[in-house]
Image 1 (cartoon, rainbow, N blue to C red):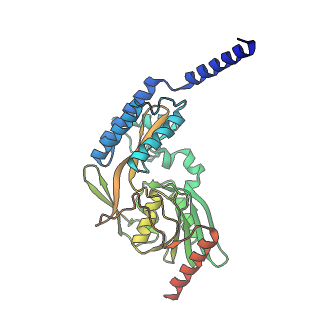
Image 2: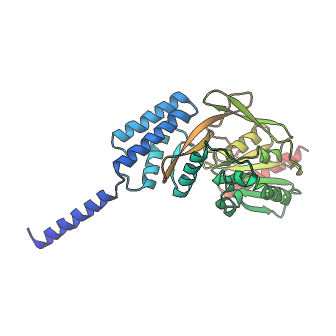
Image 3: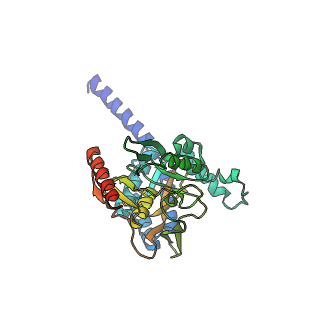
Length: 337
Protein backbone atom coordinates (compact mmCIF):
# COMPACT_ATOMS: atom_id res chain seq x y z
CA UNK A 1 0.00 0.00 0.00
CA UNK A 2 1.47 3.38 -0.99
CA UNK A 3 1.69 6.40 1.31
CA UNK A 4 -0.84 8.21 -0.89
CA UNK A 5 -3.33 5.34 -0.50
CA UNK A 6 -2.80 5.30 3.27
CA UNK A 7 -3.37 9.04 3.55
CA UNK A 8 -6.51 8.83 1.41
CA UNK A 9 -7.82 6.07 3.66
CA UNK A 10 -7.09 8.13 6.78
CA UNK A 11 -8.80 11.20 5.31
CA UNK A 12 -11.87 9.19 4.28
CA UNK A 13 -12.10 7.61 7.71
CA UNK A 14 -11.87 11.04 9.33
CA UNK A 15 -14.60 12.48 7.11
CA UNK A 16 -16.89 9.51 7.74
CA UNK A 17 -16.37 9.67 11.50
CA UNK A 18 -17.04 13.43 11.47
CA UNK A 19 -20.28 12.95 9.52
CA UNK A 20 -21.34 10.18 11.87
CA UNK A 21 -20.61 12.37 14.88
CA UNK A 22 -22.82 15.13 13.48
CA UNK A 23 -25.91 12.94 13.21
CA UNK A 24 -28.47 13.75 15.91
CA UNK A 25 -28.40 11.17 18.75
CA UNK A 26 -31.01 8.47 18.22
CA UNK A 27 -32.30 8.85 21.78
CA UNK A 28 -33.20 12.55 21.36
CA UNK A 29 -34.80 11.93 17.97
CA UNK A 30 -36.81 9.07 19.46
CA UNK A 31 -37.98 11.34 22.29
CA UNK A 32 -38.97 14.05 19.81
CA UNK A 33 -40.92 11.59 17.64
CA UNK A 34 -42.75 10.31 20.72
CA UNK A 35 -43.70 13.84 21.81
CA UNK A 36 -44.99 14.74 18.34
CA UNK A 37 -47.02 11.54 18.08
CA UNK A 38 -48.60 12.31 21.46
CA UNK A 39 -49.60 15.85 20.40
CA UNK A 40 -51.11 14.52 17.18
CA UNK A 41 -53.21 11.91 18.98
CA UNK A 42 -54.40 14.38 21.62
CA UNK A 43 -55.03 17.52 19.55
CA UNK A 44 -55.56 16.82 15.84
CA UNK A 45 -58.98 18.07 14.72
CA UNK A 46 -60.05 14.67 13.38
CA UNK A 47 -59.22 12.15 16.15
CA UNK A 48 -59.00 9.04 13.97
CA UNK A 49 -56.87 10.80 11.40
CA UNK A 50 -54.65 12.14 14.18
CA UNK A 51 -54.02 8.59 15.38
CA UNK A 52 -53.27 7.48 11.82
CA UNK A 53 -50.82 10.36 11.25
CA UNK A 54 -49.10 9.62 14.57
CA UNK A 55 -48.76 5.95 13.62
CA UNK A 56 -47.33 6.89 10.22
CA UNK A 57 -44.77 9.17 11.87
CA UNK A 58 -43.74 6.47 14.35
CA UNK A 59 -43.55 3.77 11.68
CA UNK A 60 -41.46 6.05 9.45
CA UNK A 61 -39.02 6.57 12.31
CA UNK A 62 -38.79 2.84 13.00
CA UNK A 63 -38.08 2.30 9.31
CA UNK A 64 -35.05 4.57 9.65
CA UNK A 65 -36.43 7.56 7.76
CA UNK A 66 -35.02 10.25 10.09
CA UNK A 67 -31.84 8.64 11.43
CA UNK A 68 -29.50 10.53 9.09
CA UNK A 69 -30.62 14.03 10.16
CA UNK A 70 -27.52 16.04 11.07
CA UNK A 71 -29.34 19.06 12.52
CA UNK A 72 -32.65 20.00 14.10
CA UNK A 73 -33.57 22.01 11.01
CA UNK A 74 -32.94 19.03 8.74
CA UNK A 75 -34.99 16.82 11.04
CA UNK A 76 -37.84 19.37 11.14
CA UNK A 77 -37.88 19.71 7.35
CA UNK A 78 -37.78 15.94 6.79
CA UNK A 79 -40.59 15.28 9.27
CA UNK A 80 -42.68 18.08 7.77
CA UNK A 81 -42.48 16.49 4.33
CA UNK A 82 -43.33 13.09 5.82
CA UNK A 83 -46.39 14.48 7.64
CA UNK A 84 -47.69 16.57 4.75
CA UNK A 85 -47.20 13.87 2.13
CA UNK A 86 -49.34 11.56 4.28
CA UNK A 87 -51.95 14.02 5.61
CA UNK A 88 -52.16 16.61 2.81
CA UNK A 89 -52.62 19.16 5.59
CA UNK A 90 -50.74 22.41 5.03
CA UNK A 91 -51.03 23.36 8.70
CA UNK A 92 -49.26 20.21 9.86
CA UNK A 93 -45.55 20.96 10.06
CA UNK A 94 -42.47 21.01 12.29
CA UNK A 95 -40.25 24.10 12.61
CA UNK A 96 -36.75 24.67 13.91
CA UNK A 97 -36.76 27.84 16.03
CA UNK A 98 -34.94 27.66 19.35
CA UNK A 99 -36.14 31.02 20.70
CA UNK A 100 -39.79 30.34 19.87
CA UNK A 101 -39.61 26.73 21.08
CA UNK A 102 -38.28 27.87 24.43
CA UNK A 103 -41.00 30.53 24.69
CA UNK A 104 -43.68 27.94 23.89
CA UNK A 105 -42.21 25.60 26.51
CA UNK A 106 -42.31 28.40 29.08
CA UNK A 107 -45.95 29.12 28.26
CA UNK A 108 -46.75 25.44 28.62
CA UNK A 109 -45.06 25.31 32.04
CA UNK A 110 -46.95 28.40 33.15
CA UNK A 111 -50.29 27.12 31.83
CA UNK A 112 -51.31 25.61 35.15
CA UNK A 113 -50.33 28.64 37.17
CA UNK A 114 -52.59 31.51 38.08
CA UNK A 115 -52.29 34.24 35.46
CA UNK A 116 -52.69 37.98 35.83
CA UNK A 117 -55.02 39.55 33.32
CA UNK A 118 -53.34 42.91 32.87
CA UNK A 119 -52.65 44.06 29.33
CA UNK A 120 -48.94 43.91 30.00
CA UNK A 121 -49.04 40.22 30.78
CA UNK A 122 -51.49 39.45 27.99
CA UNK A 123 -49.14 41.08 25.53
CA UNK A 124 -46.44 38.59 26.49
CA UNK A 125 -48.72 35.64 25.83
CA UNK A 126 -48.30 35.27 22.06
CA UNK A 127 -44.99 36.05 20.38
CA UNK A 128 -46.59 36.21 16.92
CA UNK A 129 -48.87 39.09 17.88
CA UNK A 130 -46.88 40.76 20.64
CA UNK A 131 -43.25 39.74 20.21
CA UNK A 132 -40.72 42.40 19.11
CA UNK A 133 -40.46 40.88 15.63
CA UNK A 134 -44.16 41.63 14.98
CA UNK A 135 -43.47 45.37 15.00
CA UNK A 136 -40.29 44.82 12.96
CA UNK A 137 -42.48 43.15 10.32
CA UNK A 138 -44.84 46.16 10.44
CA UNK A 139 -47.61 43.71 11.38
CA UNK A 140 -47.66 42.59 7.76
CA UNK A 141 -48.45 46.02 6.29
CA UNK A 142 -45.61 46.02 3.77
CA UNK A 143 -46.76 48.89 1.58
CA UNK A 144 -49.67 51.26 1.04
CA UNK A 145 -50.08 53.42 -2.06
CA UNK A 146 -52.59 55.18 -4.27
CA UNK A 147 -52.31 55.12 -8.07
CA UNK A 148 -52.72 58.22 -10.29
CA UNK A 149 -56.24 57.02 -11.18
CA UNK A 150 -57.11 56.88 -7.46
CA UNK A 151 -56.97 53.13 -6.84
CA UNK A 152 -55.76 52.18 -3.38
CA UNK A 153 -53.25 49.38 -2.86
CA UNK A 154 -52.35 47.57 0.38
CA UNK A 155 -49.80 44.77 0.37
CA UNK A 156 -50.15 42.45 3.35
CA UNK A 157 -47.33 39.94 3.89
CA UNK A 158 -49.14 38.36 6.86
CA UNK A 159 -52.40 38.73 8.77
CA UNK A 160 -51.48 40.13 12.17
CA UNK A 161 -54.43 41.85 13.82
CA UNK A 162 -54.14 42.51 17.55
CA UNK A 163 -54.65 45.29 20.07
CA UNK A 164 -51.13 46.40 19.28
CA UNK A 165 -51.59 46.52 15.50
CA UNK A 166 -55.06 48.11 15.36
CA UNK A 167 -53.55 51.58 15.01
CA UNK A 168 -51.59 50.41 11.98
CA UNK A 169 -54.72 48.89 10.44
CA UNK A 170 -56.70 52.06 11.09
CA UNK A 171 -53.98 54.23 9.55
CA UNK A 172 -53.80 52.01 6.46
CA UNK A 173 -57.56 52.10 5.90
CA UNK A 174 -57.69 55.83 6.53
CA UNK A 175 -54.99 56.35 3.89
CA UNK A 176 -57.12 54.66 1.20
CA UNK A 177 -60.51 55.83 2.47
CA UNK A 178 -61.22 58.18 -0.47
CA UNK A 179 -60.04 55.93 -3.30
CA UNK A 180 -62.37 54.79 -6.07
CA UNK A 181 -61.42 51.14 -5.48
CA UNK A 182 -59.07 49.16 -3.26
CA UNK A 183 -56.70 46.32 -4.10
CA UNK A 184 -55.47 44.14 -1.22
CA UNK A 185 -52.49 42.07 -2.29
CA UNK A 186 -52.32 38.75 -0.43
CA UNK A 187 -49.94 36.98 -2.78
CA UNK A 188 -47.37 34.92 -0.85
CA UNK A 189 -49.21 35.73 2.40
CA UNK A 190 -48.93 32.59 4.54
CA UNK A 191 -51.59 33.72 7.01
CA UNK A 192 -51.49 34.55 10.70
CA UNK A 193 -54.68 35.57 12.47
CA UNK A 194 -56.43 38.00 14.78
CA UNK A 195 -56.84 38.00 18.54
CA UNK A 196 -59.44 40.78 18.41
CA UNK A 197 -62.07 39.21 16.18
CA UNK A 198 -62.88 39.75 12.51
CA UNK A 199 -61.76 43.38 12.46
CA UNK A 200 -60.30 43.42 8.97
CA UNK A 201 -63.49 41.94 7.53
CA UNK A 202 -65.48 44.54 9.50
CA UNK A 203 -64.09 47.34 7.34
CA UNK A 204 -65.98 45.89 4.36
CA UNK A 205 -69.16 44.33 5.76
CA UNK A 206 -72.00 45.38 8.10
CA UNK A 207 -71.52 44.63 11.78
CA UNK A 208 -72.53 41.22 13.13
CA UNK A 209 -72.32 39.60 9.69
CA UNK A 210 -71.78 35.84 10.27
CA UNK A 211 -68.69 34.50 8.55
CA UNK A 212 -66.75 31.27 9.14
CA UNK A 213 -67.74 28.51 11.56
CA UNK A 214 -64.91 26.59 13.26
CA UNK A 215 -65.45 22.99 14.38
CA UNK A 216 -63.15 21.35 16.94
CA UNK A 217 -62.34 17.64 17.44
CA UNK A 218 -65.26 17.26 19.84
CA UNK A 219 -67.70 18.70 17.28
CA UNK A 220 -68.17 21.99 19.13
CA UNK A 221 -68.81 24.92 16.79
CA UNK A 222 -68.08 28.64 17.02
CA UNK A 223 -68.85 31.23 14.35
CA UNK A 224 -66.87 34.38 13.64
CA UNK A 225 -68.87 37.53 12.88
CA UNK A 226 -67.87 41.06 12.03
CA UNK A 227 -67.43 43.16 15.16
CA UNK A 228 -69.91 45.70 16.45
CA UNK A 229 -67.37 47.92 18.23
CA UNK A 230 -65.51 49.26 15.18
CA UNK A 231 -65.83 53.07 15.13
CA UNK A 232 -63.69 53.65 12.03
CA UNK A 233 -65.41 54.46 8.74
CA UNK A 234 -66.14 51.36 6.69
CA UNK A 235 -64.88 51.11 3.12
CA UNK A 236 -67.81 50.84 0.68
CA UNK A 237 -66.04 51.14 -2.68
CA UNK A 238 -65.10 48.13 -4.89
CA UNK A 239 -62.66 45.69 -3.31
CA UNK A 240 -60.28 43.45 -5.26
CA UNK A 241 -58.04 40.79 -3.68
CA UNK A 242 -54.89 39.37 -5.27
CA UNK A 243 -53.98 35.75 -4.43
CA UNK A 244 -51.62 33.04 -5.65
CA UNK A 245 -50.65 29.47 -4.76
CA UNK A 246 -48.80 30.72 -1.66
CA UNK A 247 -51.80 32.57 -0.22
CA UNK A 248 -52.75 30.45 2.78
CA UNK A 249 -54.51 30.11 6.13
CA UNK A 250 -55.84 33.39 7.57
CA UNK A 251 -55.18 35.15 4.25
CA UNK A 252 -57.41 32.57 2.60
CA UNK A 253 -60.02 32.95 5.35
CA UNK A 254 -60.29 36.68 4.67
CA UNK A 255 -60.48 36.09 0.91
CA UNK A 256 -63.03 33.30 1.36
CA UNK A 257 -65.25 35.54 3.50
CA UNK A 258 -65.07 38.44 1.07
CA UNK A 259 -65.84 36.20 -1.90
CA UNK A 260 -68.69 34.30 -0.23
CA UNK A 261 -70.43 37.52 0.78
CA UNK A 262 -69.97 38.94 -2.72
CA UNK A 263 -67.97 41.81 -1.30
CA UNK A 264 -64.77 41.31 -3.29
CA UNK A 265 -63.52 40.17 -6.67
CA UNK A 266 -60.62 37.73 -6.42
CA UNK A 267 -57.79 37.94 -8.98
CA UNK A 268 -54.77 35.71 -9.56
CA UNK A 269 -54.15 31.98 -9.11
CA UNK A 270 -55.88 29.36 -6.93
CA UNK A 271 -54.76 29.64 -3.30
CA UNK A 272 -52.90 27.06 -1.21
CA UNK A 273 -55.92 25.30 0.30
CA UNK A 274 -54.63 25.45 3.88
CA UNK A 275 -57.81 26.05 5.83
CA UNK A 276 -57.50 24.27 9.18
CA UNK A 277 -56.84 26.37 12.27
CA UNK A 278 -53.63 25.30 13.99
CA UNK A 279 -51.81 25.55 17.30
CA UNK A 280 -48.10 25.27 18.13
CA UNK A 281 -46.76 22.74 20.63
CA UNK A 282 -43.13 22.65 21.80
CA UNK A 283 -41.32 19.37 21.16
CA UNK A 284 -38.06 20.35 22.85
CA UNK A 285 -35.96 23.50 23.13
CA UNK A 286 -35.18 23.44 19.40
CA UNK A 287 -38.31 22.46 17.47
CA UNK A 288 -42.09 22.75 17.72
CA UNK A 289 -44.96 21.08 15.88
CA UNK A 290 -48.00 22.78 14.36
CA UNK A 291 -51.18 20.70 14.72
CA UNK A 292 -54.55 21.45 13.10
CA UNK A 293 -57.07 21.83 15.93
CA UNK A 294 -60.15 23.23 14.19
CA UNK A 295 -61.74 22.88 10.75
CA UNK A 296 -63.44 25.93 9.15
CA UNK A 297 -66.59 25.91 7.04
CA UNK A 298 -68.81 28.69 5.77
CA UNK A 299 -71.55 29.27 8.34
CA UNK A 300 -74.61 27.11 7.80
CA UNK A 301 -72.84 24.95 5.19
CA UNK A 302 -70.03 22.42 4.81
CA UNK A 303 -68.16 24.58 2.29
CA UNK A 304 -64.43 24.99 2.90
CA UNK A 305 -61.27 25.80 0.96
CA UNK A 306 -59.20 23.03 2.60
CA UNK A 307 -57.01 21.31 -0.04
CA UNK A 308 -58.99 22.73 -2.99
CA UNK A 309 -58.01 26.36 -2.48
CA UNK A 310 -59.96 29.48 -3.42
CA UNK A 311 -60.58 29.90 -7.14
CA UNK A 312 -60.08 33.40 -8.56
CA UNK A 313 -62.85 35.25 -10.38
CA UNK A 314 -60.27 36.43 -12.90
CA UNK A 315 -57.25 34.18 -13.57
CA UNK A 316 -53.96 36.04 -13.91
CA UNK A 317 -50.27 35.31 -13.42
CA UNK A 318 -48.20 38.16 -14.84
CA UNK A 319 -48.40 41.75 -13.66
CA UNK A 320 -49.85 42.78 -17.02
CA UNK A 321 -52.59 40.15 -16.72
CA UNK A 322 -53.35 41.25 -13.16
CA UNK A 323 -53.55 44.92 -14.20
CA UNK A 324 -55.87 44.01 -17.08
CA UNK A 325 -58.13 42.08 -14.67
CA UNK A 326 -58.24 44.97 -12.22
CA UNK A 327 -59.12 47.52 -14.90
CA UNK A 328 -61.74 45.25 -16.44
CA UNK A 329 -63.42 44.41 -13.14
CA UNK A 330 -63.44 48.01 -11.92
CA UNK A 331 -64.94 49.08 -15.24
CA UNK A 332 -67.69 46.47 -15.00
CA UNK A 333 -68.48 47.45 -11.41
CA UNK A 334 -68.63 51.15 -12.25
CA UNK A 335 -70.89 50.52 -15.27
CA UNK A 336 -73.45 48.80 -12.99
CA UNK A 337 -73.95 51.91 -10.91
